[in-house]
Amino acid sequence: MRRVHFNLGRSRFSIKVPEHSDLFEMGKAVLIEHPEQEINKALSRPIGSPPLSDLIRTKLKDNPRAAAVVVISDSTRPVPYKGKQGILFPIIHQMREAGLPSSRIKILVATGTHRPMSEQELRKFLDPRIFELGIDIVNHDCRNKDQLMSVGKTDLGGEILLNRSYVQSDIKICTGLVESHFMAGVSGGRKSICPGIISEDSTYLLHSGPILSSPLARDLVLRGNPVHEEALRVAQMAGCDMIVNVTLDSSYRLTGIFAGDLEQAHLKAFESVKEYASIPIDKKYDIVITHTGYVGVNHYQAAKAAVVCSSIIKDSGLCVLASQHTDTDPVGGALYKKMIRHLREKGAQQFVKQITDPLWTFVPEQWEAQMWARLFEKIPFDHLLYCTQEIPKSDFSWLPGRDARILAPEARSLKQLTQQSVFWALNNLQSRGIQNPEIAVLLDGPYGIPINKNQ
Image 1 (tube, rainbow, N blue to C red):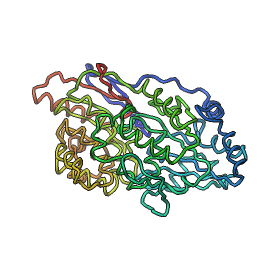
Image 2 (tube, rainbow, N blue to C red; image 1 turned 180 degrees about the vertical axis):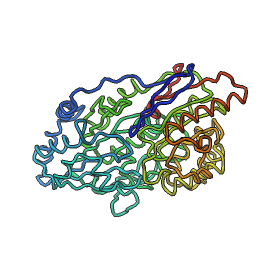
Image 3 (cartoon, rainbow, N blue to C red; image 1 turned 90 degrees about the vertical axis):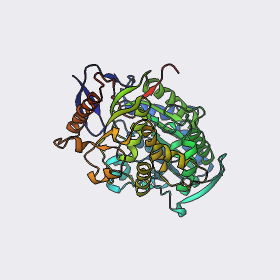
Image 4 (cartoon, one colour; image 1 turned 90 degrees about the horizontal axis):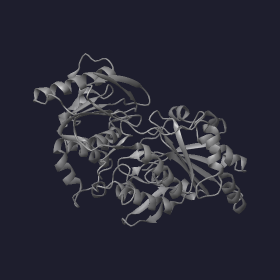
């Protein structure tokens, strides 16, 4: 047996796997040695736009009472907003140095359809100096009509409602993380706006069943990806003066800062991520073992890892998925629970057929259940060995997958639970006559993306 290490962001552990297992990990990105210096340099020499300080001075010259909004990600994304790698305070500092007072700066949390962040969570997430400056911090609420206003219609034909305070701000700065994304190709850039601060109804256009059925709505694909292209159209309608996006390595350390034009800076970040996140793989496996990473705060977010596994698992193979869920609800919202239950009841093929039917009435958060269906179109529900300590055991009566705690009742930690699940999977295949199963271990969870090297 050989030992492998999993880094879930908030915890780390190692397990043993058979010696002949194929181990896959992302390429090694070059770390930024002096983050504070490089962040300020990126703001002073942005891609395709004037320096942040010049931008602020120009806006104030045109309108001395100009106000700014800085969009940040919520805690489902490991964006470095504090510490030596923190990008938020340098942005605020340069804005204030250029003459914009704290009273006219607002920080807007791009929650999308996620729950709002509490003050306690925000204080843990953000640089403490932000609170000392008394800057207003608000959560976007996609269901509050008073917070929303129209910016027009896109090619998909629906009216786009966006956060009112963002649209009406004179200066618009968007921050975020660029990493692989199972629907939009990569995160960051336009996603801070769409779906980050659009209305729930507008989200339907971006996440409808037919759009997500496109083979190009996948990790590390931008050209022809309908999710990316629609999000970019919306973001361009809303306007953005500058993005400040980062890239991270598998240990969540800073590897790049990309500030500047919404499209140009984001494309540079995408090219950087694609270089080291792509993992060439040209075969399918009997067992795929991985974890849900930092982003897997709940079952809803764990779909990202499931999609990665779906591309390399054999029909009726086994998937071992380790998850540490830190959200207040380890499964997800009520509508997600409704749709994941529906997936379990209908089966993957029938579920996808139903939600892509023109007569289907869209249900918010059906998109994440549709992503889970990509795995379950390949394997039966009980071939997913779901390793978690946070989800109530009773929930697995309607969640797709097998509760690993039933297979390993003696396990007292996520490490033990994952290890015992690997042993169970090996024994299961042996009982089916598969003596030397082909095993893949995806060390980076949802962040390293298998790419067929023949394509």
